Image (cartoon, rainbow, N blue to C red; front, side, top):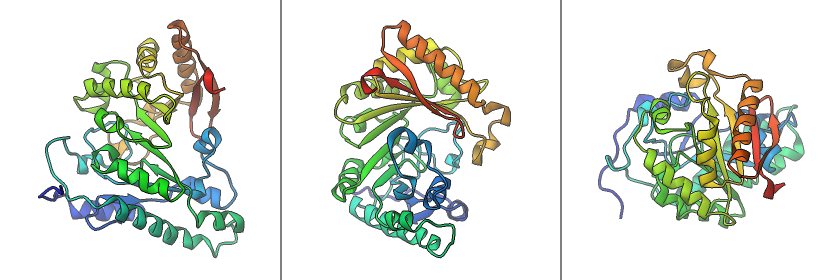
Length: 319
């Protein structure tokens, strides 16, 4: 049943996001598409993002989108203006567009967005032809996708179009993770303990996040499972054994240990010193991998992308 009320958020904030490259789709403006830096590079044959290196995704064939611009956390490291779209899980209501409308509009808008590359001498003709037929949807643009009540149906709609999906979640709605089957499921785990979590996220969902780790374990063999640790110098790059215990609970296929990037709205909350170097991230990833080994789990550092300051830890069953 469709909720009765529409969430009221500032029109000026929507306009700000539009200036930053967000393109709203659907009737009620809670879904959006945005091209990324790596799409532009990929369509010119100038490189691919680390998701391509790690998982084989072609950035120029990827739709970066969200069905929910809203979030229920206020993470200090987020580059998005989440303060303007912050809602509690049970507090406010939104009139939601249907999955079919969102998917259709996302594909159309993506086509419009890439059309400007066609006349450029830098554009690869072959890559542009491929980009016209997107093969992947990264459901991770802004906000928390599990707040959209029809996420399972949205994923199925993308899959029915012969597309794969990544869902990036903060893990605060384990009951949703229990139901969805994206091609790849991410959970962001940005603290080794509850006290650090509260400092990083300004939220009270630690119990739910732990439940989501349990749900991830249960999804083994049903979807590819990844936990992402965003490293913030001076805040959460501590207690690798604590991370290892939580990671062992989830038993993911991969762990991404990635630097916080000092960009966007996060610059209003954190100093540039909070952004660790790639060497620092690599060292911390090694500490987590060693802590996993000490606990009897079989993980190994498998890859890295220095330009994105990210290190991939893999379960040895994937190697």
